[in-house]
Image (cartoon, rainbow, N blue to C red; front, side, top):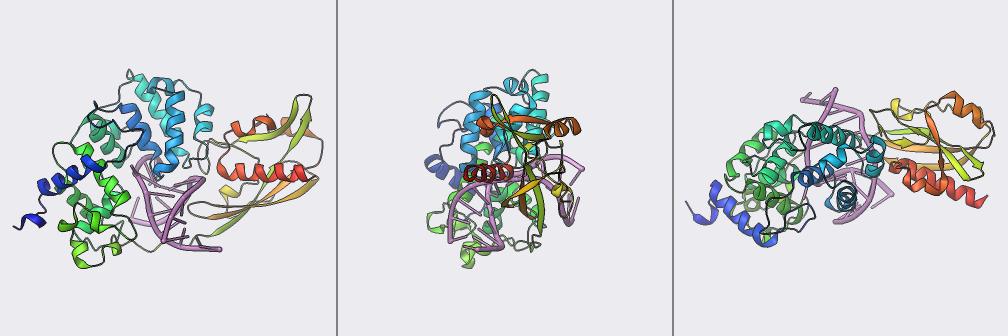
Length: 361
DNA sequence: CACACGTGGCG
DNA sequence: TCGCCAAGTGT
């Protein structure tokens, strides 16, 4: 076999690890080069935050979380609302709910994470990818780590033409073929670094790629066409209303916030009251009080599976007691500390709009 | 298996 | 401007 295009496990892993030893990104959750194994808590936390989320978006959250909760026991001891609030803005809030459930489970076993892929896989919020990643990176296990980067790199290396997601089993089989016995954690991170910086979705930088000579897609002339993907469905639009109810108190102005149900859209997060747009094709339009209401404008927000046009209404009445007694599922929140309320981005946008309106008035 | 589930950045 | 995309998981 021609050595320059040897696609054996050792050849590809060796080339990639050599490249990684020089070009690894320095990231806050990684051990410094030459340092002892990284803290499983930090590896786990970073992996959960990085699910479907960019490195750039995660960095600040990771720093805040680890400063506030330096260990899994500390995190396990936090109140739900503290953690949900700290996660606000990062998205996919089920991750934060599972994060806490997982932390408490691990704290219950003495603060030690399971050190096998199978044991990790049983924890809340750890699926096939994260269990393999933590097992390999934190515990040095031989685990086959497959994320979107690996899917792209492997699809190109072996010219896997079938579209995702159907091609996943084939991709995994090929990934297993090139994953080394030793340094599986470094290998996984090397694949992800390669996918993030060289083997990018569009315009891959093949001239810089340590695996260029092994890559069948490069030889084919158009590596960017892979991986093929199934056509996506159109994203529908939805409408809803949210309600800004503010009152004056001796201590200052306050706004009425609710806690959303523990599952579903923005589940478990603090929010403005709304008309139920999340649970139906469009909101009911129904307000929590008879009114009068004044329109404050609209907020547009894109979710994964629909776009939302949210109309914001400001309450002009004074029957605040009805509200507090009526639902009970809310709280008056000081406007001064609104940025600490932990509102998800949609409602943070709506709040900005309301505050801009009240400044005009 | 298909779908629900956030958000921000980039070409 | 807008669709694509990011270290996926749970149901």
